Image (spheres, rainbow, N blue to C red):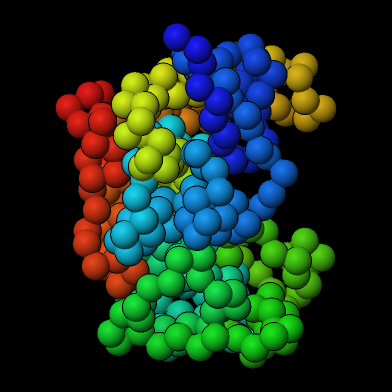
Length: 320
């Protein structure tokens, strides 16, 4: 039987290098990888246009799209993970020292549905008793997938040319939740700082308490493609896992990167989160991880249905 040609849109990352270079190939698939676009463009084109057979997508955008009738199925391949504590930024003149000081404040976001923002808002509410309804939210971008505003939540949309980063530096906002390292931090602007100066220790403590290295992105297949090729999910999981294992083995080499303490950083990572923090599949940890994020999305009013791991990955129910 001839291989089927399929296209996946995803980031260009080390754990996919073996797939990109053809060292690993999914059984039965001639895979074309599209890596020349940012996350927002990729997610928008997949959810709004069905532009690719498969895509690396935000967990929260995926469940919102599913909640609004987008037909897709997931493969438990998790291409992005990130803690949230290091991405809470504050204006240094506002007297904000601890998470409780965020209550009653004006806080900016790029989009509410970014998975990292969903995570941070959930952590603030569950770990630090800062309810989302206690915040006045300012949103810079249109949402990738539109949703109904949850009751009790105040959201202002910024106008053309307005930026949450600039408004934070100028003191128009008290804090910003952001999926990346923002420009004022890169430029050492004294008006802006991170809420947790030692965010790494905060994240380590969170991991030790919960056992979770939060999942940001999953692999999604358009439902029409999945229905035509019911074997595809297993083939993709096997290939992506093989590519990751090759990358992890390669990255063990301390000569690979020009970093002075690379080996010690690698060893510290293993000591804290184990040998494979990027694990794929229907493991107990991944199930708990996905159920946490989808639970936060539901609590925050982004979805009407509370999705579970089994809802998103029906082919992998009962596997581990």
